[in-house]
Length: 419
Ligand code: LLP
Image (cartoon, rainbow, N blue to C red; front, side, top):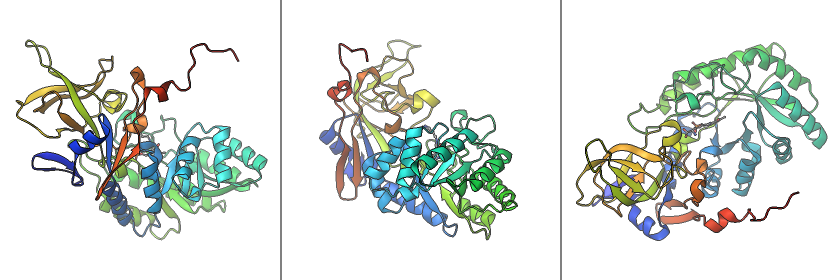
């Protein structure tokens, strides 16, 4: 475990969190690189024998230093925008190991992907296939495509992060996919490389992944009748982690089931994990500014901290639960606190009704914040985003500096001119 107590104080990989707070201030995101590296290795080992390629989903945490380290481990990347492709390139990632997902790819993003020679566009509609084909013709370079099918599998997860049901906007149904594959295979500008799907996020069971893979294999057979073969099967991401008391996804069982389901098929298996690799590695480090204990029965106890919903929106957006640890619990009496930020919204909370022994000035660690934390951050209330710190076994480095208000105002002018 990267986060552990020593002498009562919370450390990350042996470094006291208080020392990081002293060096960079609060709020701050802190990521344990050994934790990311070990999760990557664990998944890679579990999938052994499937011809696996791990395409890290950049949207979970696109910090350049993390991407660079993952690229060195041999990771591929799952991207959803030209901006994310730029990040991967900047981090030294190999574009020929990049898959590009998303329902609304722009002409600019498609052109960028084709010119970089990405491994696959995961195509989400007939119109997108037409657009990619025509851009490939203009550019004079074949585009590599997979069709993202919607396998109509229930991932048993939060409705906002379920993506594989037929009422969701993602992918195309399998019968339409066959038609699209026939068009793609007949095109001089497209090269069919795979079949893709992604059924949702924070999935704790193996069964939905088995069902999804079965769906893809059914399509492999249907395509075989038209002489169309694919090189890879991409089952997407969505591997769940433990925030509170969830059952952890059993990676070894997942690997076994996927191996058995694939059988002797020649196709390689691609996965697109985001959360699994980075969530547990990260915390949001924050300091208590004020305590507002309940003045009378019926009121609540508020611990007002210096981090807010703009830094970590998951609790406000999904009602997500993140554990909160006092970094160095002192002698304060233990009470139930709502941990809230300074933003002017009642929804600005990081945790509700948590038993904590805290005093003003104390540090808190909001746990499992490495995925969809910083990457979903905003500047609401003109709050500069926090720095990102990466911890190694031998110390820590600032991988992204704290934003300044000047950074936020840079693109604005007080007397706008009409174009
Ligand atoms: N591949 C595709 C096509 C995706 O849409 C996603 C996530 C992933 C891979 C990675 O999923 P993961 O392995 O991280 O579950 N903001 C939400 C999660 C949104 C996930 C969106 N798509 C949250 O904070 O829980």
